[in-house]
Length: 107
Image 1 (cartoon, rainbow, N blue to C red):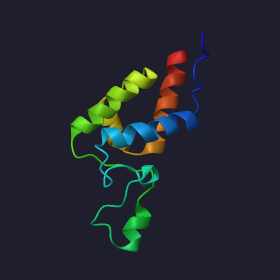
Image 2: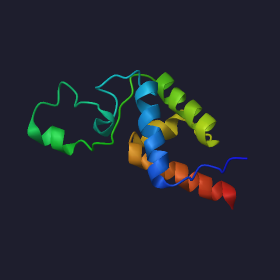
Image 3: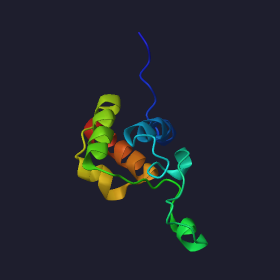
Image 4: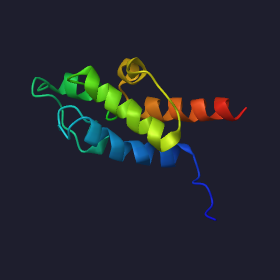
């Protein structure tokens, strides 16, 4: 029998870096810069590029948020409403939400 995977910030974040681009249709303007995305075409001045966190992502539709939540449920057993993913729209924040949720469910 195999050992359960270690669930820590690094492993959750690494998994999300693979999930998010797929759920966001691999659109470089939507996925986090930390996952290979780019700044939005309108973000041409240095101030707006610097203001964007490398882990921020965007959505074109609620369907993309539903996809993220569906994959998270399958991968981690944690169920979120699409509004949760849309509220922060940040890779690190989502990884922290996941860890907090798993700790609460274990208690």
